[in-house]
Image (cartoon, rainbow over all chains, first blue to last red; front, side, top):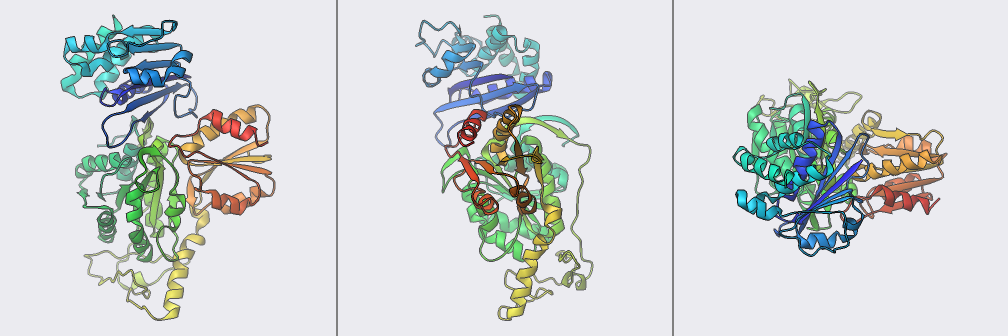
Length: 172
Length: 372
């Protein structure tokens, strides 16, 4: 079983990242996958998260209670999840926005995701940079599988920039 | 169009696919989190299938519209959540009284009142059966996966058509918003209502107590009223026997056919001293806990009603003769508790969770471990 938690702030594309990741595991790798989300209603702000659970067997836990991987896009989310951060195997962070990281943590993999994304087109696609980095670090998926999932999940006009961001993260 | 094959979709979308495959061709609704995706999917799909989608001014209008559409001979549905479901209660009784097949999806969220719109809960279990006034019976189903959102949506229509009752697909925000694999089959089994060709046929029923249904526009001079009525549909608001016979039949057409309706998943209960009962999203971690306890050699069974109402009483009473303790896991302080405590009066350990989160396997396990 693999548990992945993506955490950020509303509007950063957290849930879309979850959809892309879980689509890659389900459609491309034929694994059992559950993707659940958590966000607040009405007010467009607040901590948002997407949980992806991958297993060869039936899935019982619907949320990532002890994530193996955390992808963190925002400082407040990092602080909230600090307990999980310490226990996770891999923590991928957008170091443009998450700057306050305890120096003793050895499981942190930083990428200036928002900065790289802005250089491509917009910081809005920082989530793609992080997904690329996630694949490079964990090797849970191939970059090809993730690219295929992006093509299945986003509207056509964004595909080119999204794929560029994905590869930038992968090769960063 | 929805072709056969594998999909990776939300539970809400799967329910819309199921409804379309079951033959639903009319949807009237008012969007509400966490059921809006059903409304959205129906708005996109129905025109492609020659159906009609109407966004209404509110939930009272929504359920009224689908009752009317059903009398026009069209399989009809609406979808909502807590606050909207409360508004629909009067007309759920109207649909029961007029024996109108309709399907209502309630994707439960944390309440009461507005509560937490995006968070799952299971607090509408009693409301789904008793929410409207007066004596009536309806049918309530509880899916625990994206696949079951599809399968039980199909089943909801079949039950509504067969028994001429409002059927409620009682989901929750976790299952509705969760993404999982969905297998859409080539064909699904579809039941159609018994259609009356003559007016005379609408006034009589056989052993199943369900009269064939007429259709507006066929010239049958139908009378449809929420007032007490005689078998020919004419109002009678004074005669005791008319009220008595009508209400008894509305109850008995479900009560006497419950073996055709009850549905549950049951594992390892034959030798069980303990039993986990759960449904909907909370049944997933409950099953995980059950598997772990069985591995350790504990004589524990797992019981999950797929149809909550009518409850699988006969089977649960049989199990009550052997089972020493029942663990009821749900996202409500009330939920299904009265029903399970009725059958197991002194042996229920309630494991509720009401913070808008689904239990983890670990939480269910530790709650059980401290009680055995």
